[in-house]
Image (cartoon, rainbow, N blue to C red; front, side, top):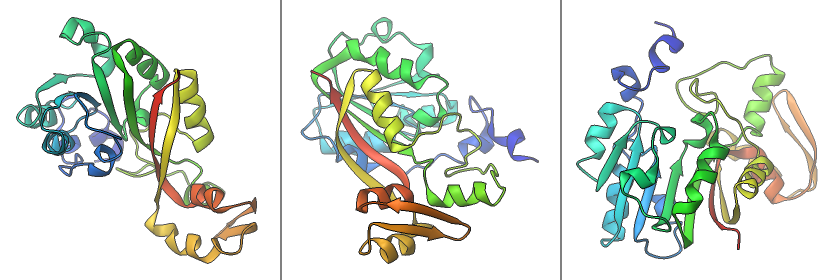
Length: 245
């Protein structure tokens, strides 16, 4: 069976369900600057992250949105409420969410799967409290590993990672910042998820910048500082955004 045959129908697909991790994304929950009262996770998978969040913030109400029916069924036993479908399928006010009620949003490796993530982010704003925080994990298309794949004539879709066959949007860090600003948010915290394949590259160059950074068939000129190097060596970005005042 080809990859496209087994991985592109996510609504009720056992082979797709096998790809879902049951591990909490605790690093994203830990990015909230203070306890949250009402958290919405878009793409909540099996609810492991929600369970961790409710353990950390016992007074929090936690809702999830999840298109995979099998994963959503498990999540519904762990969090307060799960909407089964895509975020575009729901008007939150019709589901019982009040304006200004949500003070925490988690998008863990989900924005890249959306046809229109800009609309999804903008449509959340009326439901956000003034102190709301949005935490995201977004893959990094500027990865020097991926640049090398392209330079070597490959863009081979896989079942996970940067070339996950279900990805339909691709972002550099600059484009993530621009997307957030266009939707009414500003990023106030960033940390890098360095790719294990690129850890040696990062270590080799971090103390000799500015420099040309080489990786197999690719050389990137004028890498100016450590943040620039981290962009090239990261698998994904973890960031937190707040409403633009």
